[in-house]
Image (cartoon, rainbow, N blue to C red):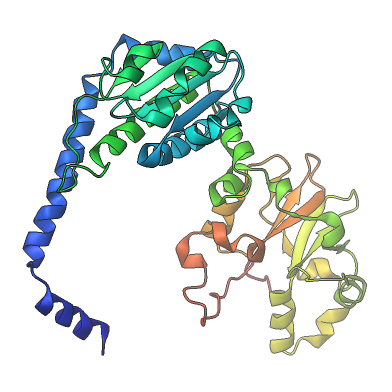
Length: 361
């Protein structure tokens, strides 16, 4: 059965029309949107005091919560940590059985509970107070147990959950997440968190790699093929052998060691296709690509990615401040960072042909 036929079959047996289903979804989104709108008017001096507290924090931020609120707490701990605030999630039940050893005097503990009566969270309060931590609560009301005992209480207000039974945490957890983000991102901004800091904390992600530097991803000079521009093509090809997967370009140097040009596999193929075998005994500088586009040690990887994408080139030399070759960015090493049109469109398709520079032949 085709997917369209299966969809029609499911629709025929379904008790609600598509319009009714869409309307139910809109009701959920509307309730959560209203909850977020209500938070705008609740940001007051207590919110500002919490921001000041976190900006000046010398210890760690400990974030805790139980159940769905605990899952939001884990996300917030990750957000704080990735944007410049040292933060850790501690499960409240595990904390009561030994994980309080992760908490130290001077830490700030951010506790999440809409009801403010969650047993696993409330039972920690006396111990956390004795440990000389500062307690910040995100909860429904300052009048519940958690709200009364916290040093700072950020109220979410009385929220109706979007669940049809009014029970499953949904609206409340959305509000917790948004308010936590409003803390983390404002603290990060005030602390002057920069793209370089983000890259330091995200070295493995695509965004982090774009914010890193070209020397972090280039093939080093020892891995690249280099030759003097005065050598013949035949001499260059014979001398430039490297173990492992080689790049498709040879970097050619001038008398002072500066990068003078590139000779690519495409250039060699073009010579052979045009039956210009005699050119193999000419100096490679006669057929090389002179003064190729380069990046310099210390440049952001995003600069290299932009050049590869805009110029549709396969190899990008990296030079030092004196113009000498230092390495090479090969497009096959950074496919995941390139815009979609330059990457393979499907696993069973070949990557698009990417030319280096037009030959002067």
